[in-house]
Image 1 (cartoon, one colour):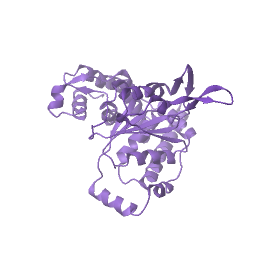
Image 2 (tube, one colour):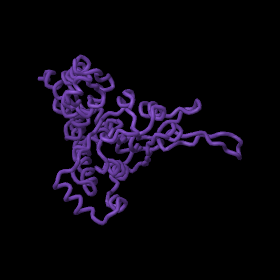
Image 3 (tube, rainbow, N blue to C red):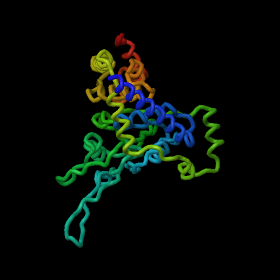
Image 4 (cartoon, rainbow, N blue to C red):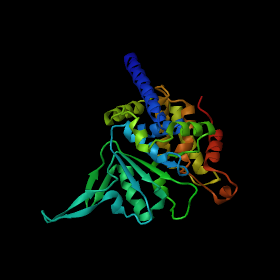
Amino acid sequence: MEENIFLENIEVTALNKKLNDIRAQIGKVIVGQQQVVDLVMTGLLCDGHILLEGVPGVAKTLLAKLLAKIMDINFSRIQFTPDLMPGDVIGTSVFNPNAANFSFRPGPIFGNIVLIDEINRAPAKTQSALFEVMEERQVTFDGTTYPMQYPFIVLATQNPIEQEGTYRLPEAQLDRFIFKIIINYPSLQEEVSILMSQQGKQQAELLLTVDTILSAADIQHYRSIVQNINIETKIIEYIAGIINETRNNPSLYLGASTRASLALLKAAKATAALRGRDFVIPEDVIEMAPPVLRHRIMLTPEKEMEGITPDDLIENIIKTVELPR
């Protein structure tokens, strides 16, 4: 038993070191945004899809490209537009004149890291094409199921300001994202550092400075470590208490789902591992609650008019649920 615990500690320490290596590689190109990088890595270890929200030009797309470069896996990009059709995403049937039959041609969704730019610009019909592939990691076309290659993660971006020509994402689709990460403007000093380090350089040149340090096998191994992180029953009850409070809060029109409680559990475990611990503490749950819940809850119209944000309400809910002792 003691030998197993010792081995687990070595594995967790190695995972923590790998995160520092990834930060260093991304730091060659992106200045700051360490919390964003940590959250993206946490989502990756949880086998979850991630929604990145921020104004144009804050390196959302660049971050996705960097992750694909750091991890020796395939990268695919889809630009969502109002006229995009489901077949443009998942694939379509193509006639083969030599064999006189139709064959399936996979769409750009068939990748390891799939970047969906401006996901809220496509209509509901196209959005629905993502439901199966995001949840079940497979595409069903004309009665045949095509599994996705491992690993499969969707990184989607959206602009919170521009609303013209956009569509609200269905709640069922939002619930399939483990995190909604808010990317803010860099600080003044970070802005100066960006200008100093990137003047006269093209994005392709910046990507060449980044080394590949993670394989698909590594990802699978690290995910197995996260699954074995210890979590006490009282912390599981704490997670359930937070989720239950969202369902009974008078300020909320829609509370969090069971998928949200599972996401919070996974995220807390991954956070503990990335911090170099083989056990979860309540602070891991508190830290992960906003990115896990902010896109899954819906405020009442009255609270929205008062200027209350989902993050404000999540903070208040956490204060009302008793900490495990």
